[in-house]
Length: 199
Image (cartoon, rainbow, N blue to C red; front, side, top):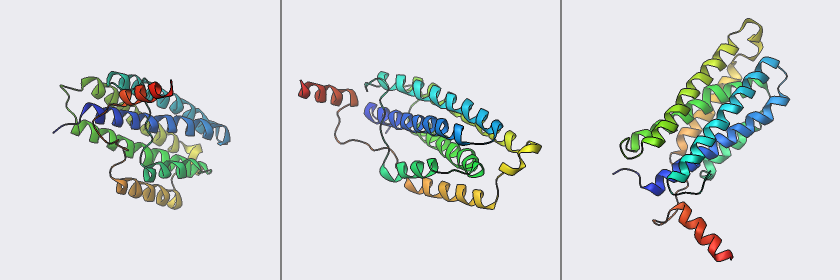
């Protein structure tokens, strides 16, 4: 059995949370990263994440959720991103982003595609597939940067590789990352009920 409309909206809303988090994290990292080449790349990828979040936010409305519906993931998953955001060394930041976070996000996107129906959910497929193509490009650009002769000092070392590997294992261990709500109600219906009760 495929995903319900509500479950689709909750997945899309959670993906939007991730992309917004990444956008804000990269925006905070950019001024505190000393290497100009890395600053430029992080700035470009901040924009990519913003575009992803916008596309997902518009799709959420088509799934009967509020426009730009954003759903915080389960706490164990959120904590992983909070920890990543606190990294300060460029080598660790680059490793965790390009070797752990982006590959894991691509796998989460693929899981959604594998458990949804192209015929019934084609717009979501288009949004997600575009995001996945961008992620592949972003990872290539991260690798290209690290392979530049003058960027040897930010290449993945044993410590940063270990940190990225541990993050990936913990991310995979979370399993269900979407905080699905109880009952059949749709997200937009819930928002309307909350607004109605406040008036």
